[in-house]
Length: 361
Image (cartoon, rainbow, N blue to C red; front, side, top):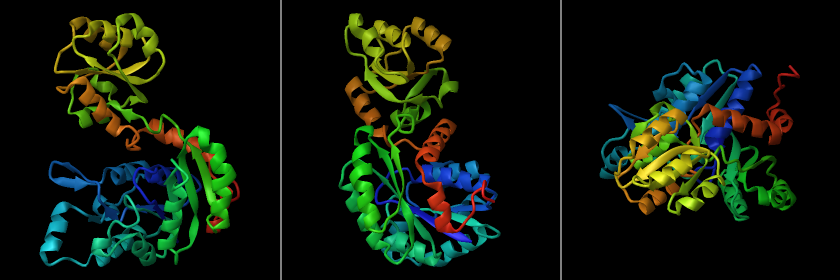
């Protein structure tokens, strides 16, 4: 059995997307796949349980039978840390994770381990990524989101921290299209000379960094006035409706699949937005819209979100979530799968694992 640890040096690099897409490819090629996220830090509370949303989504996509507590055996909650810092008796966390791995990996050909936000998390309990990799004899797959040339520094620092582990390669993700040539011409050859195979250079795609309407609702604490069934529709950009009505229509036509933020009393702006490719309206100041707007939105299937904050505050809140949206929509999975098939060196990946692909089996 092979074990791969998918890690990064920072948050929101696309680890879950890479994990899901590679896992689906392995499953299609007939390999019995297991998955585990040994350490969870970003958690969600629902009723009486705390869980990792990304891991729960992966379980659903891979149709895994194991219970969630085995797939995510250790949740690093504030309560756990407080108890540790007080000196309260603690379980053997290393043993806990090992037992979960032993159970999940039964009868598997391949185990995918998803790392935490960055490789150092978990140090406080003795389970940073280098320790996890050593425990399970895992090979590494590094995922890095490219913004500047200094991303190479993060990749090399991560490689140095994991020096005793075999590295399958690096996926350089979300490269702005204007910098693709730079990455291919300079960054890729440089990393290859450092002994780091570059398995993919993936261009930035607006769909993958879009947020769905439901994510906006949750982030803003918004009230949904209509079309709640369209909550999974994706918002690729944001526009503010603060202009004169004469210029509104031409302005809104510049961006498809957008959220328009405007005051609840701006009926003219709202109507103009609804005449263009708008995914949702966000009305500020707790000002409810004219019934005409509600009727038109329902006809078009455009949700209206009502928030109590003013327009500028709402804009700042929406800006916070763009680029940090989670990979939990089927449309995103399909899109990333297309990108990876086009840019990922599957032959090199499979040969490094000494595994045949489906068309070779």
